[in-house]
Structure formats: C-alpha cells, structure tokens
Length: 360
Image 1 (tube, one colour):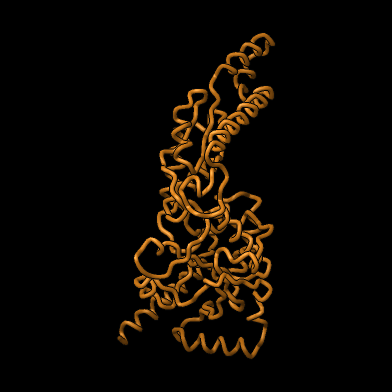
Image 2 (image 1 turned 90 degrees about the vertical axis):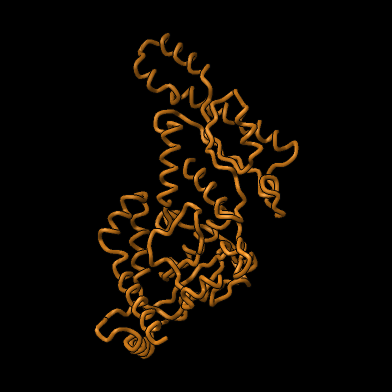
C-alpha cells in the first residue's frame, strides 16, 4: 500500500510539472495560428489567469456519460446549444475575475476535446472515481454564486506563507513547484435559472478552450471536399425541429411538429430561394463567368443559364424525417452528412450536431 501511495504521489507531481509547460511559447504560437486573430488578446489574458497560483479554481462539471451505464453518478444536461452558451457565459465571469478554470466533462466520442491539458479536472479519488463512476463533490443542487468567486483567496501574507509551507511538505524537497492549489469551487454546466442567467460572453473563449478531435477534423475535411464548399456557392440551412419532434424527448424544446413540420420545411427552402435570387443579382453566384464576360449580352445569357441551375444547399437538421424528405426533393442540390441524428443524451448526438455546425 505504501508503494502504491508513493507511486500516486510521484504521478501527481509529474502531472504538475508537465502542466508547468502547458503554455510554452511553441504551444502558444500553435494555438494563435489555429484561432481567429481577434482572439489573441483574450488568449493572452486567459493564459495569464490560468497560471495564477493564489486564486481559486472554478470547476465546471457534467457527468452525463455515466447516464448510459447501469450505475454511478449521472447528471443529465441540455443540448450543446444551451450547454455552450451557459458555459461561455460563466467562463467569461471567471475570466473577468482572472480565476483559473477546469472542466470535469468525462465525455467520449462527441467530436470535441479540450485544447489544453490543465483544463481537465482530476478528482482526488483518482482511478477509483472512474471505476465507480463517482465524484467526490456534488453539484446537483444547480446552485452558483458568481459574486463569491475569487473571495476565497484574498491576499494574506500569513495564509500565503502557510500554503507555501504546506506545498513544500507535500512536494519533493528539491522541487520549487508551487502551482498546485487546494481551493476549488464546483459549478454545474447549466445552473438553475433562479441562480444564474446567462449573459453576454466572449465567443473567443470557445476557440481557446475547445477544438475538434482529429476524427472530427478528418470528417470535416472529407465533407468539405465532397460538397466542394471551397469552389461552389452553397447556402447553409440549419433546420432544428426540437427534441420532442426529433427524438421523442419529453421537454419544452418544440419548434415544429405535425403538419407544421412540412410547412416549416417548405418555408425554409422558400427562404433559401429568395436568398439565392438576391445573391445572384449581386453577381456573387456567377462571379467567374461575369469576370470573363465584358459584353452585357453575354452577362445576361450567363445569368439566365445560372438561374436554371439547381440551388446548392447544405442542410443541417436534427430530424431523420426531414433528411429523408430532402433526399427526395429534386428541386435543389441538397448536401447532407451521412450521420443519423441522435438525441443529446448520448455523446453520438453531440458529435453529429458538431459536425453539422462546423460545416455550417
């Protein structure tokens, strides 16, 4: 047992030392090259706050992967839209206070991963927690008090000295690493509405914290090439019908059902036709032909020919019925992925939705 404890301590120290190099110059440079340029300042601030050692860490939690098993800790959370906007709102609150953040999000196969290793929460029950599908904390009350964030670690020289001494006792005597922190505040991804109302957020935080997995990136490249997004003008259409209609989930997400489902489909495509016509008049649809034709008659002939072409539409939807209807709609050239829409209860549903959203 003593040997096992010693091994766990060594692994913990090794993990801390690795985290010291999470934000080295190479990683920062690679990250900046892969996110929008306007997000660079937010990235710099985020990294500065993540490296703080004297303030609390806000841990955002969700354990819905275990809802698919026969035992363990289960916390059902909403779909990726509600989940993301609430998370980014609270991430912005934490960044405003320059607090460190971690995510306890034991998801698999959902297409998205955290960009930096030090964002991953490690429960002090370690592997036992994973085996038992358990966590040492509980956020099921959905409570959050942002006003209290950051008050747990006011600058107190005596307290700081005690923390440093405790760190010295815990760590290797030859190590000067004082990064590990004890104070953590745990928050559910989507707190109750009477506790928290999501508000404006910095969208850059999404690009900074998350990235597509290699598998999802491969699929994105495949469909982008297949649909020729780089060469053709394609109208993107996001048609969500709601969880009740699409998956039979008993919640309030009802956007179209019954006869209104087909009516909504027709209205969406009518809107796409109007948009296409406006773009065509602006010369966007036929730029290449127009650039090569200086004669007005040739230009008008080119527009007439292009107007006979089928409108190219990429359809992202959560409804299998709509996908089948679109496959038989010969009025347009409709592109869709081969993924079958799945409810957000399972990680496969997230992956399918992320694939559609990234392609949009």
